[in-house]
Every structure is written in structure tokens, then in C-alpha cells.
Image (cartoon, rainbow, N blue to C red):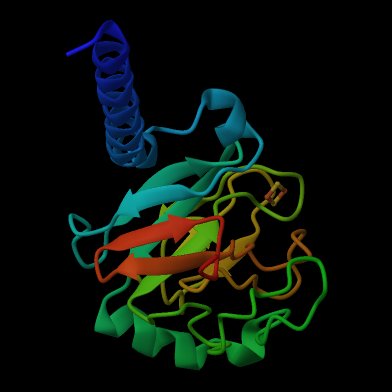
Length: 199
Ligand code: FES
């Protein structure tokens, strides 16, 4: 075998190894990148947030942060969903017709304001001056609430009240319903908040 032949053989091997390395690099890079958490800066700029909702029991609320805002995920009971039917006449905007926070196109049910009625997803910021309302899920008479209270949220700042779909009651300082952010179901137990359609 001549030197020329050795060199050619070696070069061929190196090229083959280089290609294999590059392919291997790509193959291992893909799963690595897909599990890479968004940077803090990307989150602040509005990167969608993935949420596991499997641990929320009926009647409970989970709060997550999206774009620096609290987003509530409430798993509503059948009784809480039934109560929504009684509120329309007392609400300022029962069908979310006002333009301040239009419902995402993926929300067709104006009463529950949700993709799946059981899970309410809203931004927990009062539309008056930006306080965060408190949970008042227990129906019935109680301080600062009407005797026929059906459950919902009370803003402690100036007394605005919202039902269990985040719809504001009439004659309160808050002008609008709570905002429903864009969101979608990745699976039955995982939500993506901040995006409502597949890329
Ligand atoms: S900030 Fe909620 S009622 Fe004023």
C-alpha cells in the first residue's frame, strides 16, 4: 500500500466520522432543545406557559404567572356551573360583548367563558384599578356580598364582584369582565397559556 493510498483511506474515514458526528449532534440536539426552559427574558416578553392541571380538585384554584400577571385556573363544580345560569340579569356584560377584553376566538360558550366548562382560565386582575380579587366561592350571605350571592370573586379595593366565570356584576366600579387569556389544551391535563392554536 502506498502513502497516497493510506492518506486517501484516512481522509475517507475522517469524512465519514465527521458526517456521523454531525448527524449524531443534530439527533441529540433536538430533544435537548425541546426540553430547554424559556429564558426569564422570554417569559417576561410573553412566552406561553405550560401548566399541569391534574392536581386541581373540584372547587380549587391554581394560580400561575404569565406575562407577569396572575392567571387563575379554577376547577368549577357542577353546582358552580349551574349557578352561572342565574346571573345574567345582574351582570354588566353577560356575553362578553365589550371590546376591552374580547374573548379569544377559541371560546364559544359565553356563559362559562371556557373551552371546557369545568376549567375557568382568567387573568386575576380587576378591570377597575388593577387589584387582585379574592376568592368568594361559598354561596350565600356574607360580609360585603349580597344575600343571594352565588359564588365568585370580590375585589377588596372598591367592592367589585365577579361571578364564577369572571363576569362583573352591574353597578360596580369595575367596567369589564376578567380577561380570558388565549390558551389551549395540549392534553386533557396540560394547558398552554398564551397560545390558542397549534403552530
Ligand atoms: S380595583 Fe377592583 S374594585 Fe377597584
